[in-house]
Length: 153
Image (cartoon, rainbow, N blue to C red; front, top):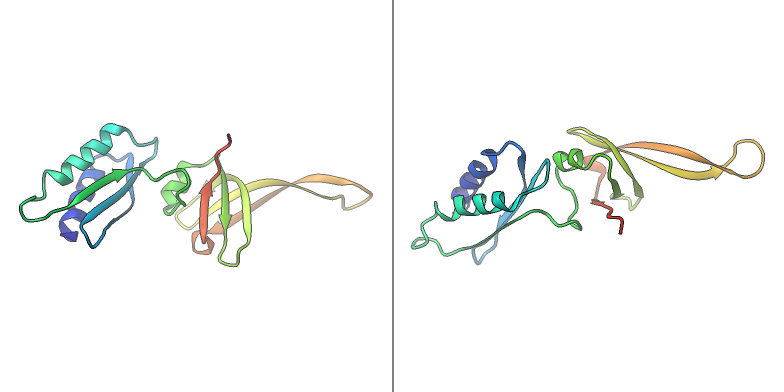
């Protein structure tokens, strides 16, 4: 059944170039969980369209399953370069495998890395006191353990 679901899922998502598949899985008890996102968000109509495309093309007499199609939640870590690009201009918190933490604004995202910018107060190079310094860091996706968009309340 996995191959059937994968084919139907790609057909449904590829029908709208604004959408992209984040992840999906089938549990041992045939619960199909799908996370889809869009460059400009994910409309309810698209969730319904994707769900129907999958449900209407799998024989219920042959396969008993439960299907959930949704967008990743705000607390769900980013996992694809397209998600990083979608969030350019937003604040992100990144944790590396060495447990280094970076928090800053996403300024760029390629297929290999994300670039973030933040400001920090540092001692002046000459004299007393501190001054604000802008930091910029490019972080390869392979060096990211977890990355979550920060929501201001």
